[in-house]
Amino acid sequence: MKTQKSMLIIGGTGFIGHHLAVKCKKLKWRVTSISTKKPQPDRKVKGVTYLICNIGNLEKLKKVIKDDFNYVVNLGGYIDHYDKEKTFRSHYLGVKNLSTIFLKKNINSFIQIGSSTEYGKLRSPHKEQDKCKPKLIYGKSKLLATNYLINLYKKYKFPVTILRFYLVFGPKQSKNRFIPIIINSCLKKIKFDCSDGKQKRDFLYVEDSVDSIIRAIKSKKTNGKIINIGTGKTVTLKKIIDYLVRKIEGGKPQFGKVILRKDEPKIMYPSLKIAVKLLKWKPKISFSKGLNKTIIAYTKANI
Image 1 (cartoon, rainbow, N blue to C red):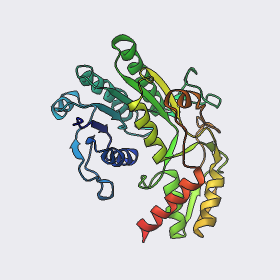
Image 2: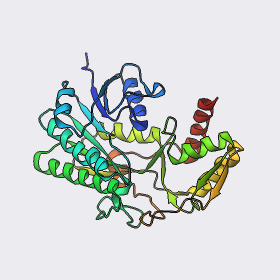
Image 3: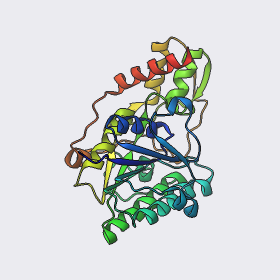
Image 4: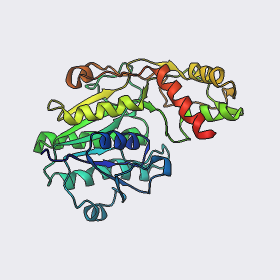
């Protein structure tokens, strides 16, 4: 009889964490989540153990993490480009605390979810070996965490893989994110402010992001590696907005009302060569298909 695999998801009540928990339960793994709050009703997964703790507090974290786990995935962290201290504590100090605990435990894999913002305004396509120059505190904190974990691998062979996600979207994403804002505004047939929409971004459907995590967990070739996870393609924000307005038949975009930050890149997308080589991974769901699945999910939620 096979021993049941066990997974600890930091941030299991969040958008990607929820979808990862669903996938792990389908694989019949034991799943535990650590987050700062209880899951929303629509993100609660049957059979998952939900624990509440701020990973920035080492002593409390030690008391909460009592069991052993095969796999740890860190999706936790606070995103605010202006609250520097809170962002720094949740991303960099949180990672230091987690690694302090799991260096002493026999885990198979620690997956750190990084961010495309670690590259800053570097020219796309971003390559993992590029010298990162993040401008925002979020990207800076993520990069500090990346470098810290890579050093742990070099020094102690800590089994860490860094997955640098680009813009993940899909059902159950927080309502204050770009695509949910546009969809909900269109469903309500109301005006909404936006930029000129000329920025080009790489959007990845959530199921593909979860698949990349599972592949990294199971791989023996990714320890100590940084791997870009996206589609390798871009779409302008205006094209997305125009499509959603036509598809849903509602919404009144006010283009140019939102002024871009000076440190915001015009175009961001990754090279996927390492993902293809080491993970044998490529996204399966096209942007248009993922977007239509997301529209259906939000339409049902608004009925």
